Amino acid sequence: MTEITEDTPEQEVNEAVVETTEHHDLAASDLPMYDDMNTPVIALVGFVSAAVTFICIIGLQAAYLQFEKQQYEEKVVNVKLEVEDSIVSAQKAKLNDGYSWVNKETKTIGMPIEQAMKVVADKYESN
Image (tube, rainbow, N blue to C red; front, side, top):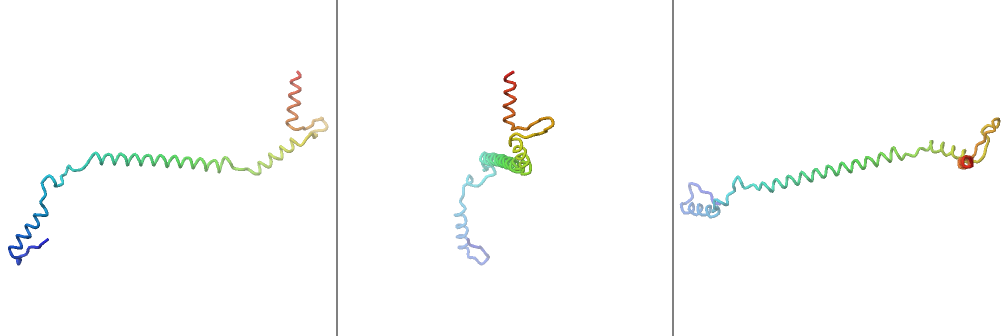
């Protein structure tokens, strides 16, 4: 673009004016207007963005709750209690090791649970 100063000859001034008007020949309808915003598209983009954000939040919350449940089961529910397991194993072994005297004076004997259930079932079945 040509600068116009006091020392510029008149012919150059006319060329500069013609040059600037040639580049800016725009119709009034081509000029941007205040109402040129595409409101439906803006509303659609906003709605879709809100929906995607909501879905992401729900998905992350579901993933968190699933992870929390898994951690709870691993740390609380499925904990192997070695001391309790050894006590229970010892009691089962004692109950299933065969016949033994519980009290010789009262003639009370101990027998395996399965055998005791069969004896009681046979006793009541015959009645």
